[in-house]
Image 1 (tube, rainbow, N blue to C red):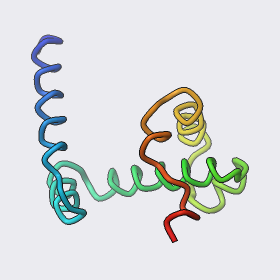
Image 2: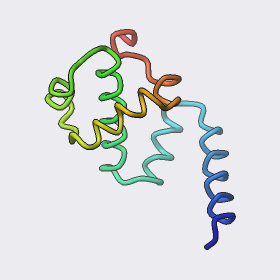
Image 3: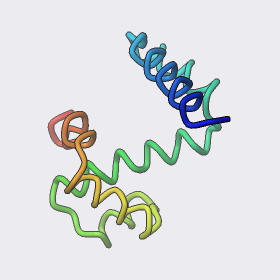
Image 4: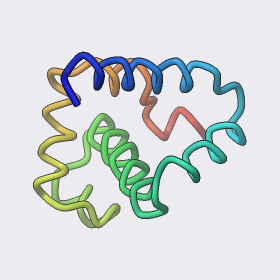
Amino acid sequence: MDKTQMKEMVDELYQILLKLETKEDCRILLEDLCTIKEVEQMAQRVRAAQLLSEGNTYVEVIEKTDISSATLSRVSRCLQYGEGYKKFIVPSTNNK
């Protein structure tokens, strides 16, 4: 498969994700697309991003999420330089 074909498939995935309207829609699609472990790992990253954005230290985040230090480092870099966490991840204290 060449890069153009892969890009088309990824674009199709994005189009499907744009159709999600409810948490239930998201749940049923992720159950089909991902393993339970993959969904759990994504949830772990989201929680880690929330905790880091609230000022928790690496040690505190690892204790609260059981995330690996390598994955936490990646989450931290994405918080600093990426766009997705900044746009979509609201600190959990604001969700209560």
